[in-house]
Length: 434
Ligand code: CO
Image (tube, rainbow, N blue to C red):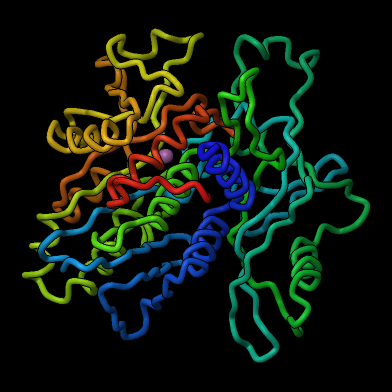
């Protein structure tokens, strides 16, 4: 039952978070609802321990922390990292394209998306728009068109006889989705305005100046399989980990100092003002610890659990994995290793995570890429490099990573949450109200 409640919440979170902006808004709402106080990076902070706080940067990265009764310099932080972004198609600024009697949207591929699954899907548009009010003020607003307003139809097999053998996708010419016939001018700014007015009636005269919008599939997240053993959804990488981290932090013990960081821009290498290569986490920790001495003591006593999905061994492609390191779905979270430091796990940090899994009675698996294959990476090594903090890279095994619809095991999601609860000091009592 507890597991069912967790997964129900996860499915809702996935559907309500079509973009990193929506993910952060949902995280912030849940934290505010649990009496976490929002901090503004541009204001003077007065932080008290014990106390619970969160701060966002760029509307799409978030750090939340609960300070316990023990000073950070003495016991450090238990930190859990994840990322808010997923590969997708982003709208170009001059977005309207006219072709062969249709209006289409100009799109750019964000991150290393698997492009084939984007064809023949019901798509909508969501993200952040920046508008100007009558007084000349710029304001950011979130928007979600919600309905299926776009589609990228495949070319029929009769017009491309080789489609099942060799199909190449040209990102510039093959991907623009169709939104309508070209009977009338396509004015996306006006469409955005109409929707904003419908949901925010107090808006006066506004002008849409620019936007950060992307396409997403409208098919909702679902429990699937004959025995409901799987979850299928867009953006499981890595909203699954954001949600598990959030729920664990909401249950954190009053004694320990616990922190979650959810970064945008992981899928494009994390190099930005809000990405894991940037200053966000370092700056927040500097302000919490107040001086270099306390900062250094805190870091040396901290552990960073970098949570990002892993690759389960696919029954149709078992040879893509190292035989000895072939994680299965629903056999527990995966610890990721790479001796070239694409993952930051060490024997020592892996042992710490294993201890957590053993303590809550869940299995744990190891992953190493085949030695003759390139390895992915994530925010773990970047954070370890930036802070010098002991780090372990872990994640739920999945199929179809970076597809428009990914697949995870419905037991593993809850197992990751249980392990994170233990790390956040909630060692005896597992919550059942989520
Ligand atoms: Co990821």
